Length: 248
Length: 224
Image (cartoon, rainbow over all chains, first blue to last red; front, top):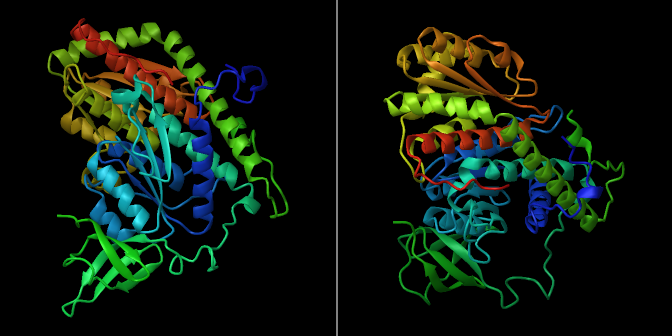
């Protein structure tokens, strides 16, 4: 058995293709978030074993001397309600599941609104562009139904763990650039709008929303009555559109 | 520390690195190298274990076909892989569902036994309660030395169950134990690569069992 380090003469044998670069980007992003104090939340509504495997990988490293990192499995079939209560802005969400899985899609989307960076592992048809920050996908036809059983998902999250720990050897590359308010990028001064999730609707009509920046009051006079859990498109403190209804 | 863990470490004393692109290229190269290693190990192991897989699959098909139950168990990551095997046998994407369940699924049972009688007995005590002649005990360990697995095999053997183990490295005590009827060893030094190939072995085992029960069942083995 040759070792993985004998790479110079197997350069043409690249089984991962573009997925190798996706893994690299995801690992660096995860290392950056971990070094800023993130917790990794793990979900796999159809195959909770994978969520448990990812969490134990990070919490209890198999290689002596590697840092134990905070990772937690949320085993619920619908992870959105428990995640809503548990996560903090800056955390990470890693999910293993199909692209057409409604609870996976909703978890990824809500996590973005709550300020999490998201990683989605799966096989078969890819999720829609933008469905998660990092999409680590096995696209060959044989993978569709079986990747969960053949060890191929296990390989992907093992690689993610291994690469994340390599990033910790490069502390200079883990610093994140703080967002600053300049004329070009300030979200309230520019035309940019962002999503917020309705947290409370007070009896006097005050509506509080949650965004990656935290909780804030928004003006909802432009749209119909809102309910807890609604996703609103917010521009300069004003809700301009209801994007989707809250959880039923 | 395993050798592949250090292949791409370039420790910098100063914290002022700027070469993000260089790091990303190294990471991608490392990922591909490990994937190649995993695939080679899988192919070599499946070839080396072919007869063992076929023999074990024949025993499994006979017992499961006659109504026996497959009990799977392991610790840590191997416990999740054991749960995946049980789920594959019991709720397969296609083919015939067979009685199988994981002995790590119930946290009340696991913590009761761990607290009251000791963690080394968490599987053997469950096998006393559930195991019957005609059933199968399948334990998964990378070292092959987990005490609670070895105790589980001893108990299963005493009760007339068929026993099978997946191990890594040189097979450890599992390979030497007279209580283990079938021991399939992934001969490697990396826990991660061993687990990936153990999953592939278990999948191949399920494919072979399904074929024995119904030769018309066609399953495409996936490539890594």
